[in-house]
Image (tube, rainbow, N blue to C red; front, side, top):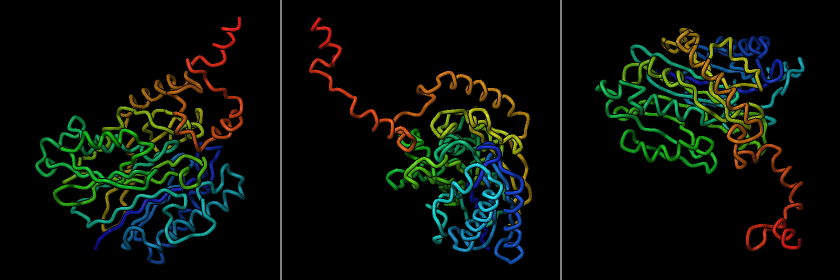
Length: 379
């Protein structure tokens, strides 16, 4: 029997502001999932959080994209939203962009990562959850896990990994996808995934077996809603050991913080800080961005865990470096590179500001010196 692991998340209300999830919301979600498990829909389940995002972790035998599983997630988010509104939590229901369920949560606001597979003799799973960042934040970590021998020595010395992996890359703006084989197409792939606001790694596959190694959420809230309604806060599932990178190789990319887009109002670049689950409470300038990793052993669909993988003290240096990077970026205030480039600000208030100023722009003269040149000439 194949097992399906579904991780579906949504921001349905923050406590306080955008900094945390209220424990009552998580408890209510857990009750919804437990009922579904009792009714036989789920094999196992857990409700958790990362920052102000409610995370639903579910195992079942119904395959990816199943109507009943997605309906369960949607109904759970609706139940949580009702409670959030009753408690007057901030941004209650902000990720639920539709009035009613339409068969699949994809394109309705929540983010999701799902993978279906035959369980191996031992099946270690790492689930990454991020807050205050966007789809595409996994591009560099996934590249390092599955294509960089300086990160993953298994690519060099493990015979069952030596032929590399296939990356499925999504163009999230043009709604297209393409596949690259690593290592021979690394340079072509980097041209695209080096622009994470436009291209996102959706999945990674073992080239010899075709087995799914990793899958991420690539939903972009602003592209769905047509306006800024909150950052995407993506999730990612990574299988490890055996024909996949070891647990330590999967975690290693996060030992050196990288800059990702998001942070305050989704409009700034900031360091992605690896933290324990209890520290996924971004509050400084609504950040900086956080990433949590929960580790599980799957046993016939049952979730043994979680282990809080970033609670390890060996990530203390990464957290210190992330704070230093945050200081450096904050010095720029509203200036780039802290604030996102203008083309990435189209779903904020920037278009209204530009529309207000439109009539005040004057054309430059032929020499490119504009009005100032004409005034100087007169004098």
